[in-house]
Length: 235
Image (cartoon, rainbow, N blue to C red; front, top):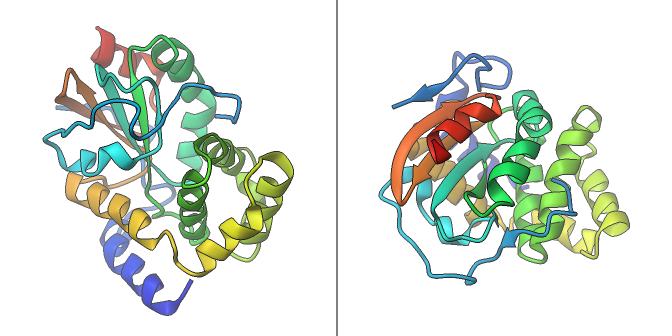
């Protein structure tokens, strides 16, 4: 990643980092006003594009999405691969969201990379975008791998470990993904997510924006329990 891109990232996220510790997202926060086996990936173009009147949903039709995209209920999730609180959410809450809300057709889950914790989260987010461009299912598998093996990643090894995982566990060319990260091929896609999160006021990760029938409902911060999402989206 060249120095120009690093400076751009720091300029966007620096304000979020100031005065905040750990994973930025707070486990005590609440509402305010996967693995590669998942087969419910809603790909861009499978249904009509939509526009939600909320900053978090900017460019939503181009984002990695689990669900059938009827847009009845939507979770727009800003997550950082290097965030321990995101990992707790992925382990403790996301599986039930996937099985009880996404698989039933009630909710679509939209992922947006928001790498504002440890430095390796930035190249990992670029790798997720580069993988998504090739194979959405492989992207979800890579995202899960980052959380499963989070303690093993660092700035020094993230690209090597990413390439090895993709080459060994998916049909995606991991070397090509690494080359894309090194050439900043996904910089615009990553910056779009950073800009959307900042404009929406995401002060930590994970941060979730919940929509129902096209209308914004509330913001949820931290690794909250499944019932927080269920009550808003299906209650």
